[in-house]
Length: 402
Image (cartoon, rainbow, N blue to C red; front, side):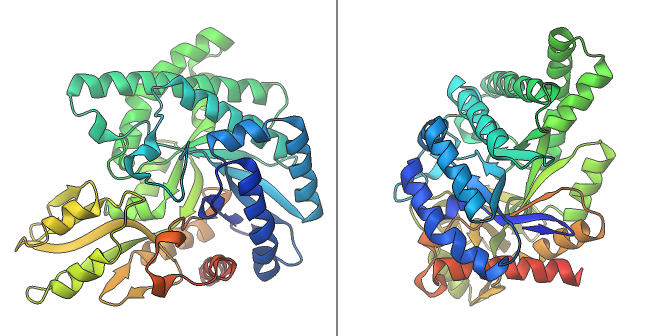
């Protein structure tokens, strides 16, 4: 749905179904119910998540035309897609395999180009479109310095192959499409500093050489094309887990002339540890320890040092440290809830980001992303369409208050 602060939707990765038929059935069940609650008289935007299998199936003319007709009849449109998880994302162990295949592979390139072609076919005229994607690879797979460097170089070159296609689409009269890179804890790009360093030390140098050669661009034209087609996916949960101040992140991006393609509106789990009586806090985090998704934890110690844990069990095993003051866990919790017993969330970061967006919009794409609905503790699991609508209404309220 269009708001004065941009197009707002939710990511359909909350819905199960890895084939297109399965996922489309979920969309048919839930999208109209959500739309009726938050956008009954206006077009409703969709943040579409397609697995590789679903993208192959939807690429065919018949299902694509059928989906386009369904969108028309239901007064809906697609403007952003989630291209981070390639394979199964529900009812099976995902963990670090959410990064598979990474950007060092041809499979990731082909999948992402396919998503953009589908998006270009669905996108309303005059609107820009974005596909969010993984931060190159999973850092813990490449601990050796030389291996890390090699993967980063090959991943960057592969990403530029996608950008080449986006430039061709734009030059042929098609829409502006951007690849929205999504830093997250333990990703090869984990935070704003690493994203900016990669952009200027790897992406721009390689891309300028490639596009001045392929398209006869000047260096300035090549740099502008890259900045238009490779943008940041600002996942609020991810940046909050890394203790990054939203205002500082956006000021850095503005200083370097880098764009935000999408805000993923999400909240992380947060807990403060008292000097004594820590067991309730530890037990509360343990209730969120589940076996499907990665729940990276970054601890803040009394000297402000940050300690990284690749998943919740590793943090729980180290919870006895006397200098421990705070945990932030990569567990997307409902944005309309602030307190979870002795735990809280990083929802305040969402309010700050949305206030900055409302005051001076820095992107046109806003997407609520709470994909963990199926693995939430029972007390937090409400009816799905009602929960999604409640999240979107809370976001709209924040935008109106800003």
